[in-house]
Length: 268
Image (cartoon, rainbow, N blue to C red; front, side):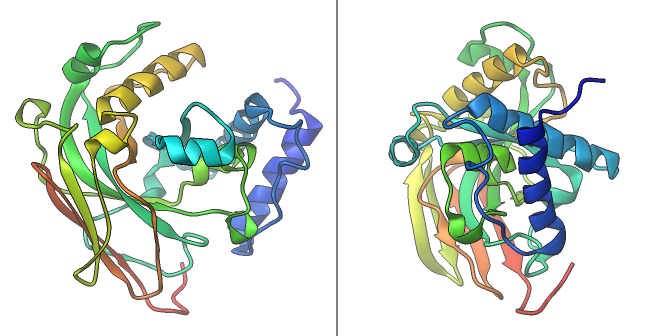
């Protein structure tokens, strides 16, 4: 078994301590070579290995940094990805205990659930459509183990693309019934709109983001597999979350999904 690079090991330890204690940590970019996304993904993999040793199962993948504005803010020109695990999945409308996601924020997305593997070196949109069983509306609850969201691209990649939890709707819709590029989205808090957007905000089309992920994961040796859930990226601006909030996302053609947060002082 290969020995973990000492810098990668230190960064993984800092982030995992934050996860386990619930106390956000300092950024990890000071521990890694400047701008080294490969090192950041090595940290992410090391953390995934720790979760696997705890009995967690990978249920899919999330795509982040799908907005050109956010990419520019972090100084990158490409999306990023993180792993979804079984303990991150929350049933539609079920309570998310407050504090289980550090510094929680939320965004509405299109989720794809695959029925076939995607193993080509280069994929087309048609490949992704053929491999997808159905789409669902989703709320991704993003979180940062890094204090005050003081993140660079290296920090968010290392921190599993700032993943926290995800909530899927329950009415599967075939892609043949959808126009995801023009599908409008509204995310409401207690009935008041806090974010709006459309499919075109996600790399021009959510399926474009899925193609990017499929190609990237093949290059890295762990391709998308049947049964995977893919969160394709935000359809509108991220919103902050407070204890007791109830968020509902509605996406044209896909229906709605709710994320409900427990009261202050709630624990895991």
